[in-house]
Image 1 (cartoon, rainbow, N blue to C red):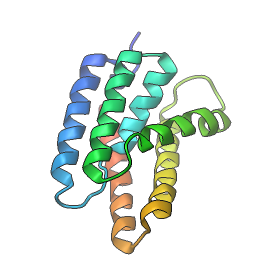
Image 2 (cartoon, rainbow, N blue to C red):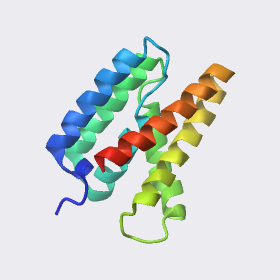
Image 3 (cartoon, rainbow, N blue to C red):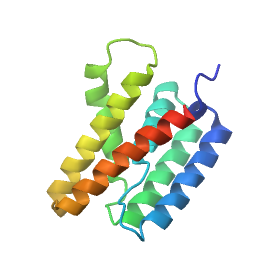
Image 4 (cartoon, helix red, strand yellow):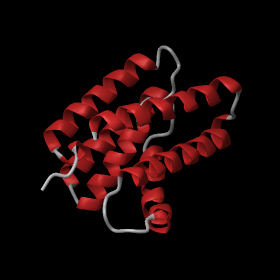
Length: 146
């Protein structure tokens, strides 16, 4: 039984293509990594439900975004896995999929991404504003596709 649109592999594939193409276009305008929170949510759903083929496509989408943004390959995948293994079980109070929990998980992802970006590349006001705009865009985009 499919409970949201990110669990449908066909819709997920087209969403991943859309996110990859938007990131290729947005890298020209320096918006860092757009919709990475939605990819993290797809990663979480695929890993939780053991949709391994869909998870492969999500990891490939992460890889495209990392290469396009200049981030080390598989760093977003490892960051997502770290959050899935260590942070989400502490924050998850129920076993059901809750929409509010997904927003909190995306917020955790962006906080960890901010820390990672700060440690490796440094932070200035332009990057901070871009990450803040990415969080807002992710929340809106995720709300539409859920």
